[in-house]
Image (cartoon, rainbow, N blue to C red; front, side):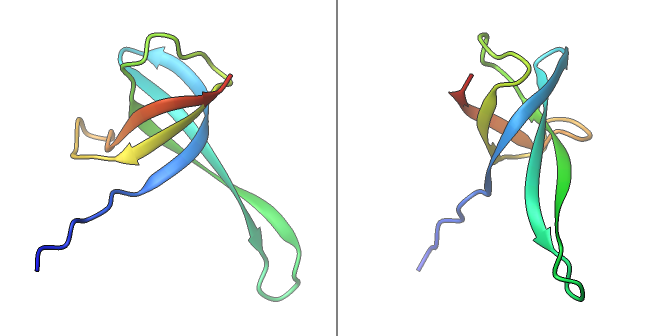
Length: 83
């Protein structure tokens, strides 16, 4: 009974391409305050391994979890979704 572990997947916006083979991708999510009920945005930035040559800042990408590639990189860009 070997169960395949599914890697986590996220969609995010490319905010920086200043490093070699690395893209900084920002993921925004809406959170509701437990007491007051107000919605607010929580952002998190991930360092992703980038081998796509046609990537630019502002693109939306799909990235998945992978083995550690460096000190902070644990994500790999799978495909570009929207320009």
